[in-house]
Image (cartoon, rainbow, N blue to C red; front, side, top):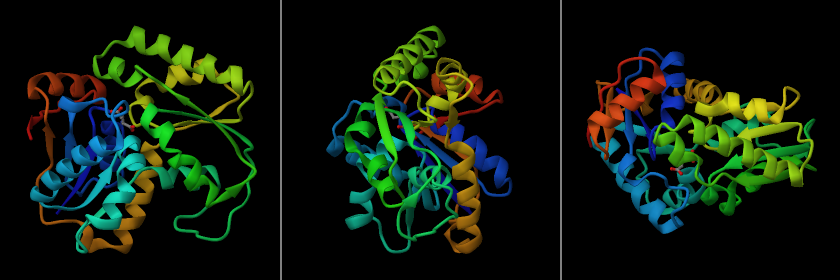
Length: 270
Ligand code: DGL
C-alpha cells in the first residue's frame, strides 16, 4: 500500500511531512520534478504534460491515489486530468479544496450553497501560473460570497527556495508582501498558495504582521487525506515501500531535502 505525493520540487515535502505524521503506517512515494522546477512560469499545456508524466510514474510505483502537493499543477492541470485522463480505478487529488474549506469554515465535502463568511479581505500569495489561472477564486466562489481576494504572483520565490538562497527568498517575500499591501493594506487572512512557501512562513508572518492569520496547506491536506482514506481505504495502492524519486540530481536533491525536513532523506532517480 502506498500513496503518491507529487510536486515540481521540494515544496511538496512540507505536505509529505504532515501526511506522514498524520498517517504513520501508510508508505508514501514522493516525486519531485526538480529538473523542471519551477512550474509557475510555464504554460498550462507544459504543466499538464509534466504533471501527467510524473503521476504515471507514481502509478507504476504502486500508488492508486496521488496527491498533487503543488498548487500550480492543481490549478493548471488537475481539472483537465480529471475530465479525460485519469482511469476509473485511480484518483488524483489537489491541495486547494482543504484550504478553502478551512478558510470558509466548512466541514469536509460540505457542498451547500455559497454563504457569507467571517473573513472579507484575503491576500493570496502564489506562483504566476496559479494566480493567472484564477482557480483559487473559482473554488472560493463555490463556497463563499463577499470575499475580496487580492492575489500576488511571487515571481522568483520558488527558484530562491529551490536554490537554498534564504537571503534572497526573504527579500522576495518582503517585496511581494509590500506590493500586495499597496493594493490591499489590511488583509485579515493570507493564503500561502504554493507548497514551497511554508518553508519561508516566518518571513511571510513577520512581513504581514502578527494580526494577519496565515493559512498554509500541509496540516489541512493531511487531515483531509486521513478523512478520505477512512472513507476510501481501498485507494491505498499496492506499493509497500516509501520512496523519494526525483528527475533532478539525486545527491543534490537529497542534501537539500535533508536540510528542509531536518532528517536524512535519500532520493533516487525517477
Ligand atoms: N510547490 C509548487 C506549488 O505549490 C511550486 C510551483 C513551481 O514549481 O513554481 O505551486
